[in-house]
Image (cartoon, rainbow, N blue to C red; front, side, top):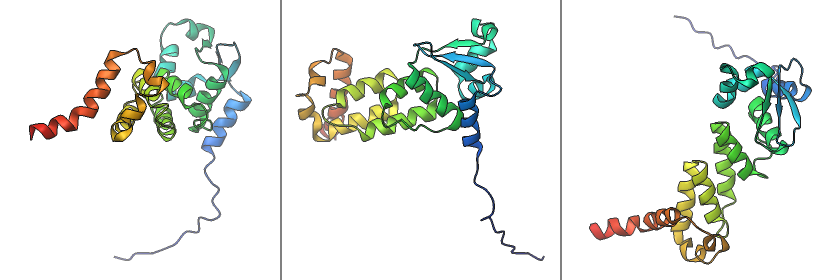
Length: 197
């Protein structure tokens, strides 16, 4: 058995362009076959195949006998700046403004079932977690089924921040007994387990 250890010089191979090529497709609208409109009625020329391949929600708009299927116009509940970011993510897998508007993008990612974008938003929100915004972050995570963010926020509260958090404006505005109960149960879980042993 003879083996050849041939080393290929890959320095002359260009970098992958797929992400940039798809982003250019979004930016120039070339060969678009559908229009998506923001709440403000700002229009984006897009491609059914791209939208459908990335989001089950968007795919459903074109799979059945829906108005969108016949008109090739899709009304989005998103504001134009958020919709633009969602479309950029759908086409390029990039989220350039995720650190600027993670709350809005989390809601949009949940709405369109974009799990990777949702995870990026959860990470960005976790980085911004403070005593002052912990309750709001927990409520946001609960609202959009962001389980990783919910767990990380509960850990943050449990790790000695609970007393400080009860003095914040967010805590004063909590209306959900379920949320308070969930925080209490999470904080007390280790104490209860210790008492049992």
